[in-house]
Image (cartoon, rainbow, N blue to C red):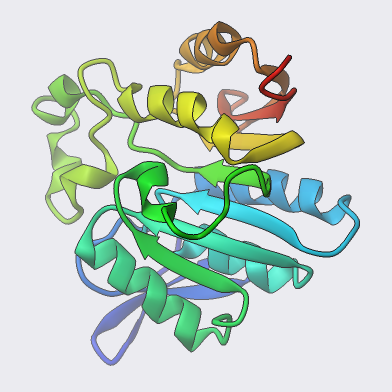
Length: 227
């Protein structure tokens, strides 16, 4: 994605808005627009008041800001672990005038939402988790850490540590019939299917593919905790 500069900071276009990359945060990738567009299509088909979406591992806030700008009927909760990511996300929410509908919290995955009374209320959860294995980051993918934080990439020994937790913890926050969408690395679609099926709580709706035909985003419907 083409970057431009504003007062020494990087601006990156994402889903129709310009995201300011302040501090040490991940620059949005084209694959994440696949995730955003899939989420927007689902939100566009939802009716009723009080729609809530959660952007887990929100980074610079690119997903929640892009989605909130395009879906004014939805309120968003964004969450991330690091100081820089949370600060950048809050800055983007403020500069885009989205503060009334987008709230950013800090913590370890869904623990960041403690006190928000979000359990069982989310119509949709999106997540662009770290999904590169620790070994690759210490070898062939080490170049990724030259300008961006390890936390944005390191998905543990097999690259799916955060995905495992996401799939396991999201049901506490989703409404029955709500959706979980998450990005994953090239070649990780079998692991994604396995994680979803293991819970017995999701129905895999679709894989969103990139321009080369590779599956990069999982779209799953939450059947309900009693399913």
